[in-house]
Length: 443
Ligand code: GLU
Picture (cartoon, rainbow, N blue to C red):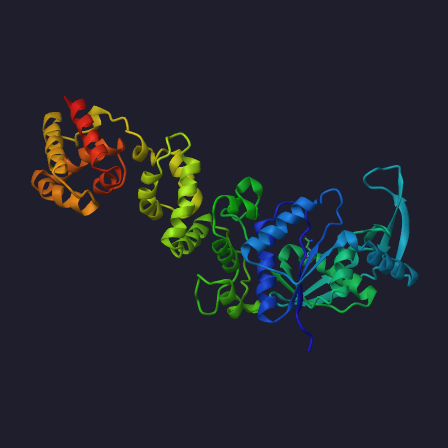
C-alpha cells in the first residue's frame, strides 16, 4: 500500500500567515487521519526575501497551534540535488541552456535554463474540483532555473515532491495555475504524479483577498492579542470544512477523526473576526476559574498602569471581567477605555447627572442619605446582603430614582454593572464614602 505523505511547504518570506496555518491544518488533518507522514519543507530558494526569523516564526506558530510534523527539510540545503536533476534534464535534452537578453536589465545577456515544452494539453484530477485541463502551448519553453545552482520554485517543488515521496499535494487554489507547469517538469523527470487537492482561499469580509491592510494576517498577531491556540486552530479548520457530525467546536483529535478531504468546501469562506471571537469565548469558558484569574490578573496589571495597582480589588473584579470578554486583549481595550478605573480610584461625578431624569436634587439627596443609613447598618457586605437591604426601599421609592443615583455615585458612568455588585467589590467603607461625596455635591 502507498502510505500517505504530505508536505507543509511555506516560503519563509513573512511571518506565518493565517493562510499558511490553514494549509498546514488541512494537510495535518488528512495525514493524521490516514496515519501518514508530514514533511515540513522550508522553501527558501528566494534568497533575497527568505529569512531564518520568518522560518522560525512559521515553525513556532504552527507548533503553538498544536500542529507537528515528522521530517524537516530546507530547500537552500538541497541545491546539489536540484543541480543533479537539472544536469540530467539537459543531458537528456529535455531542458537546455539559453543565452538571452535579460528582461530586467535590457542590453545585458543572461543564461537561463528552459524546459522543452511540446505544448500538449495537461489534464489532472483534483480531489476537490474534479478534472482540470490546461493547454500548455502558451507556457512555451519556460524557465526552470537561473543557473544550475539557482533553481526556480517550480523545479525545486517538483524535485522535492518526488524525492520525498509526496503522495498528496494539498494547497490553496492560487496554486492551480502552477500545476500544469509542475506536471510538465514531473513528466520530464519521469516522476510519479501525486494526487492534487486545491481548496478555495478564504477572503476578508468584503470578499477581497485577506491582506495586511485589512487587518491581522499573521498568526502571531492573534497570539499577541490573546487568542487561545485551540480557538484559532478550530476556527481556521472549520473555515473551509464542516465536520460530518455538524459539530463546530472540536479538539484537534476530534477533527482528525472526522476529517475527509472530500468534505472541504468548494467555495471560498469569509474570515470573520466576530466568529473567531465566538470560538475564543467558547474555549475561554472551558478555562478553570484559577487559570482564568491568573491570566486575567496579568492582563489587568499590564493594562492599568495609569492607576495604583490594587491586587485585592483586581481579584474581586475577575468574575465581572470574565462575563465581559471574548479575548484577553478585550481587557486591555476596556482598561484603556477607562471601564475599570472606578474600581481603583474615586470617579469624578457631575452633580447634574446624579439624579434620575425628572427627579429633583433634593429628593435624590434624600434617597442617597437613606441608602447610606441602610448600608451602614450592614455587617455582611456581599451582593445579596446589599441587595436585600436596598431592594424593598428602592421598590417603594421607585427603582430608577433610587438605584440610578446610587450606581452613578459609585462609578461616575452612565453605563456600568449593577450597583450591588460594584458596591460589594468596593467594600463598605469606600461605598459609603462615595455615596457621601455624591450627597455633598448635591447640596
Ligand atoms: N512555497 C509555496 C508557497 O509558500 C507553496 C508551494 C506549494 O504548495 O506547492 O506559496
